[in-house]
Amino acid sequence: MPQLDIYVAFSQVFWLTIFFIVFYLLIVRDILPQIATSLKYRKKKVDGGAITSVDQEGDKVNNQTAETLESSLKNSKDLLNKINSESSVWLDTTLKSMNKNTFVGANELYIKTLGELKGRSSLIQEVIKKN
Image (cartoon, rainbow, N blue to C red; front, side):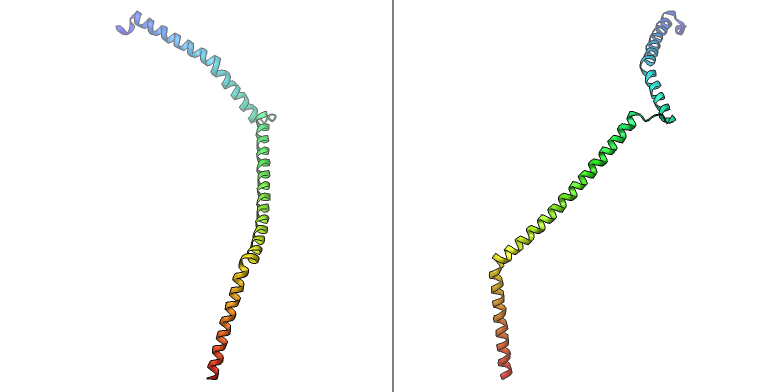
């Protein structure tokens, strides 16, 4: 029977043994210590042990984030209020200067034209009444 041939079986058993020894050493040396550490950490966490540095760091990061957001919102609000007040002042001064310099002649012409039209219409009405 070729399956039980000593030369073939010996080669297969040899390589199977080498493979499992390397695999066993890899598991014992690298993987099992990580699993043990993870299980210990989980047990501490579940048992409610002392606050770990990870929890403290998480709280610190949350507090810093909240402070940063709060200060940036305050700065944004202050900046928007400042821009609003400055733009209101600019708008008022611009309107006053426009009215004083640009629209004076236009306003005078408008009032003069209104007066002429009113005068003409009143003259026409008087002429119509007399006839």
